[in-house]
Length: 399
Ligand code: PLP
Image 1 (cartoon, rainbow, N blue to C red):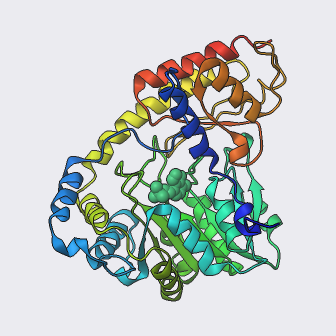
Image 2 (image 1 turned 120 degrees about the vertical axis):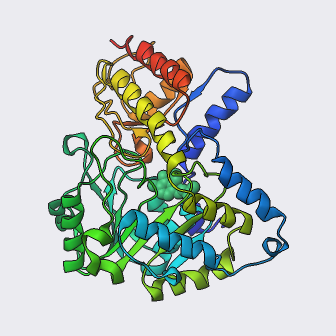
């Protein structure tokens, strides 16, 4: 007899959360596991943000329900941050505050995708997108760009994947999992293509402040303002301000879409916790000093990790220009024998690395094709060096 519905039964556990949970369980059992799985900064939330939240706890106004779309002051702060960071104006009423960027992802697809609609999904992709597309009844259409293409899809590839059923394109630059960042020219070209074909753009800009070297984040609505009526911007405070636990994100878009998503959210979760919203206001209004400090540390770790991984025989690790992930190509290691086993997929290699080196990494299978690993470098310098050193020692035994 049927128990779990087909719709939910088809959803896989988040592979990144699963790897992280496994590493934490092993550590709790006394194993010296180093975890490169988690997608969160190791820094504490900046003190001025925590203080604003503590003060908000004492204000009885925050003990009650508030508008489903978000506190007006936060929607205003998001509009101001958009002008400051992206260079274009938005109406605060075009913003819906969500429980983390994740809820915004699900609500964005739910708002514009009907059953059978195809969504172009550049791969490697963040593991949550295909689940959100499918839950909305949509069909994820993967468009893969490997290491040879610097993990960046081209307009030609998108055009080749376009059909009469193509409804939307997902953009995520800087990218989780690859750290790739599209150039201003590439964003302009992709945006113009989407506009020409009436394809919705759902752009997840959650890593927009984390770019390195000469890379710049390009907001698609800055590059192609005419897309405003067919673009949904997803964002949040989690990655920028070390606020993963506070659960504040948002979606911004055309009024009809935001209205529909707000109606949905009013039944699903109502408003985001008021104390968290107050914390987000303090983060957005508080300037970028704490963020710049974090970026100095992340940049140092990025360069250390890439240099060590790339030096391993059989591993090709390009330098990521954004977010906090390295995405090495490990196909040169597959098929070789390490301590009596011969991994032929990146999933098998990741299991071997966890078992033998006690280091947790996420296999490429979680994000698209096999042959790659994702390692977060948002952890302490000493742990990072130790973990990568263990991987290098293990893979050095391959024959
Ligand atoms: N988008 C991307 C690409 C992410 O990597 C994440 C978190 O891992 C999110 C959105 C959502 O983050 P949160 O729900 O913590 O705001």
